[in-house]
Each structure stands twice: as structure tokens, then as C-alpha cells.
Amino acid sequence: MKVSENILYTGVDDLDIDLFESQYTVPEGMSYNSWVIIDQKIAIMDTADARKGQEWLRNIAAALDGRQPAYLVCHHMEPDHSALVAQAMALYPDMTLVCSQKASQMMRNFFPQADLQSRTLNVKEGDTLNLGSHTLHFIAAPMVHWPEVLMSYESSEKVLFAADGFGKFGALCNETDDWACEARRYYFNICGKYGAAVQTVLKKAAKLDIQAICPLHGPVLTGQKLATAISLYDTWSRYEAETDGVLVAYASIHGGTAAAAQRMAQILKEKGAPKVVVSDLSRDDLAEVIEDAFRYPRILCCAASYDAGVFPPMHDLLYHLQIKNYQKRTFGLLENGSWAPSAARTMRGIIETMKDCTIVEPVVTITSRMKDSDLPAMEALADALLKA
Image 1 (cartoon, rainbow, N blue to C red):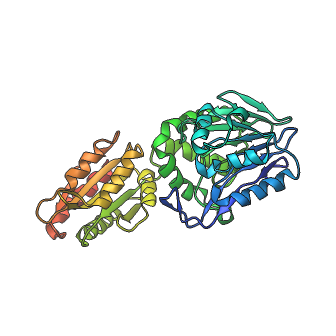
Image 2 (tube, rainbow, N blue to C red):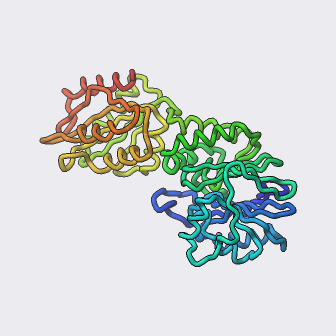
Image 3 (cartoon, one colour):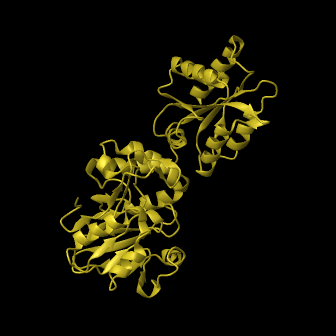
């Protein structure tokens, strides 16, 4: 795959990986993207994960076709992109490593045996690197989503090398037209906490004439897909809801809370909710639930009481939302308890730490099993949630 006649793709697909970052299921695999810019001075743009080291080195050799690279640009130090830096520097002894000062410090931690400092060119916001007919303009992108991150804009072909920005789950060989689905799950679980930093980079990008975005995961974005991606990133990084609807998330031990959650979903649909998504927190992929929690403006949390608190699958969801800087959402609460209901109190305590989040009344309490006498309160909760 070529981005252009002079920007060659040298990345690799990983179809054997089961968990990305040891926590996210990736049934369609992952891509580790890398490029070579062919010019008077040749630049390799990032490396790959050590899992695919030999394949990446073969791709680099094929792209170089006997030529010697002048630079290796490292935009991001996370090991799925930088694991082969020391190996590549040893293989091409006249090559200069280009990275941020913070990345240079991290190099010593990741490659303690390699002497890279004497061959490193540290660059910062506003610096340029001339390759001949191509020029890289460096853009600082700290906390998208590590502190050392750089992006670079190649001005002759109008290409933005966006590090982990605009990335997605999935190998390129399994790519479909639906970019947003797995890009959304990727963004909220990996970059979601750092909306302010993403907004800063988007403001910088708005000043550039960008015709293609090359992320470190996922496809090259051009045309309408590029415009869609930028628009969605603006929405996501401002923590605004993307789609009107309600996420009903439940954590049930013996089925009583699950039945109440399903009935609440039915009531919400009957009252005109444009979209209702139901998630079983004990079984569904938590990363998918987090994606939906950010996608919709309302979330109904239904949970059993447990050890004077809340059933752990619900605690896990709320904890993950809390650390991802979840905000600007409306919550409804339904708890279940057979003798001393405690789930709502615990859920409220976590939610109240979240910025600009509202809990509507009434909070519904059922005891062991949903009864006809619970329905008026459940109806009232649905009304309050939809009016919020």
C-alpha cells in the first residue's frame, strides 16, 4: 500500500494478538503503521511492535530497495510503535533518530543497553526537518495520550502523521467502510481521558491544509472519511453525546436486577426513547460498554447490592468512567437489595465525583424481585431520565 508515489506504507498487521494493551479484545487484529518517505534524505516514520519485528524489517528493506535512510522519526514511545528503534538504529548506523526531548529520556528506559543519545536529534513544536522536496513540520501533542508525543505534517503532500490520534482497532486486511465503530471504542478507552489535549491538537490541525491523515493504527484517512473523523474527534473530545439515546447497564447476581433492567428498557422504548442499548456488565465487553456510555447522553445504572456496596461489575464500569474523565451526562439509578439496599448509595458516591453529571429522581429500589408495586416508580424514573 502506498500513501503516494513517495510515501510508502511499511507497517504490519497482527492477526494473532488476543488482547491489545493486555485488556482490549481485538477480534479483527491490529495494525502497527509505519511509512518510509523517499526523498534526497529518506525518513522512516515509526517502527512497530516487537511481535512483528521481522516482518517490519523486511518491509523496510523492500521500501528502501538498497538505499540508506537518513532519519528514523519516532512520534510516540509506546512499545507497539517504538519497540524496534534500537534494532533499526543498529541496522542502519548512519541514521539519525528524531524525537521529542521527553521521548529521548524514555529511550534510556526502554533501551538501556543502546547508546542512542549521540545519534538523536531532539525536535519540538514548530521545528522542521527538510528531506529535499518534502518537509516535516513538528507539532507537539502531549497527552494524546502520552506526554512525549509528536505529530508531524508533511507540507508538500499535505499529510498529517498523527501518532495514536485517529487510530482504531482492527488489522488493515480486515478493514471495512465503517471506520467509526472501532475508532470510537479505541478513542474512548485509550484517549478518552484526554479530551482537552485532543482539542488543543485539533485547533492546530485546523490551521493546516490536510489531505491525508496517517495514524499509527488503522487506515489512512482521506476525503469524506477524513472529514468525518475530524468531526467525530471534535465531538468526542468535547465530551458531547454523539447519538441521542439511553444506555441501560446492569449488574445482576441472580437475575432479579436483570429482569428489572430489561423492563426499564421496555418502558423507555414505549415512552419514545430514540435508542435504547442494554448491556450485561457481567458478560459484555466492558470496552464496548464504555464506548456506549460516551456515545449516548443518558445512562441508567441498575445494580444489585453487594457486601454493603455495589456488585463489582457495576463498580468496575463506574471506576473506568471516572478515570476516563466521564462528564456531561445524566444518570438514572435502580438498585436491588434483599435486606439492606446499598447499591444506589455507592453508585451515587462515584458519580458525584464526575464533572457535570446529574442523577435524576426518583432512585428506584426493588427488594429481591421486581413487583407490580415497583412499576409506578420505574415509570417515573423513565420519565425523568427522558426529560433531562
